Image (tube, rainbow, N blue to C red; front, side, top):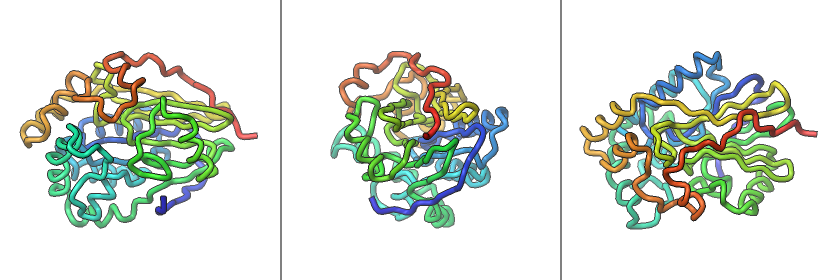
Length: 285
């Protein structure tokens, strides 16, 4: 995919990676508190896109990201909003439930982001690159070849390999699919932090982010947190946003599994216990 890329140099120490705030201000505020409690500066926080989405406070979320001063790439929603497009560009199947819901939340989001902020979104790159503990890292949204491509843990490695070949990166930090996972092969590592704006379809209200650590090579941990999901859901209902998504905030289950491969569909409602602390990525030779 043709797009703007920004190299932010070398990072060291703990790096917090998150995506999919989805206009959920309550979750975004809590994540910022977590970063501050852990002593992680804004320059070591990476946003993989889709700050804007299903929930009720798109402008407020963008304002918080701006004042926080973190590194952000444009997700498909930011790209559509900044260009005043008529749809979210999420790559949902036409007339699917997700597509129908997007016809409710996307016009709301577009109308509630002011013009000055839309202009600011033009400064967001499509990709970020940085060096970390001897590894070359790229941050992208769906995939390097397609911002709206859904790539999951079960997605064949051949699909991921094409992205590594196109980017010449050792580590890909991705977003978009809504589920946290890591997948590694032959010294290459595809890591998705998950999202903070919606639960991970595991029947809990927890939302997910990731911490990179360079204490011994490179390691990563997927971490979760609770937040004031009741307020977020109430605001959605008050603003006539999809009731099914508001319900998801409280029960942790997606309305449907239309975008999910068979393996991830079978895992709906199963509490995540699969993320081991300090799963080694290792150092580049």
